[in-house]
Length: 141
Image (cartoon, rainbow, N blue to C red; front, side, top):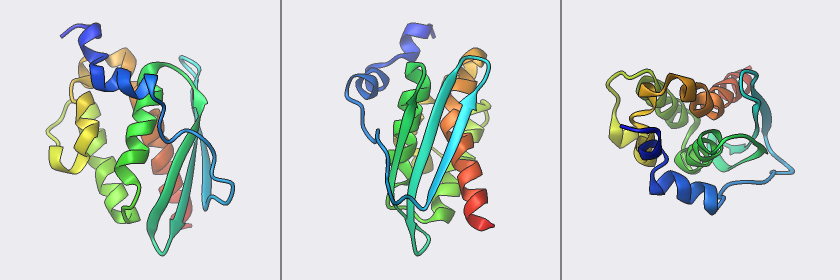
């Protein structure tokens, strides 16, 4: 697989047609994430009500991998309970590490199923997911 294959039409579509970008003024949580090695930055906004992610958006800048991954994250967790979001997160982390993962749980995020073969891009891909993990931990406190 080449790097060009990684930038599949689906990933490029997320870059060309940004979804889930913006802020949620009354967000339950606002969490910043930074990838110091390449400069990618995102802020994840979650509106959580009764343990359900009612709205998810992000802002920031970075490469196509970090930005499309953030959009896929928002798509994957919107309407889910925090427990379901955590389950998705756990499966995505397995996928990013090249381990077996449940494709049904990760849904469209599976377009990145080969990301582990590109070690320099894994940090870009996981930035949003680590930010989600920090958000969930913060909501528990």
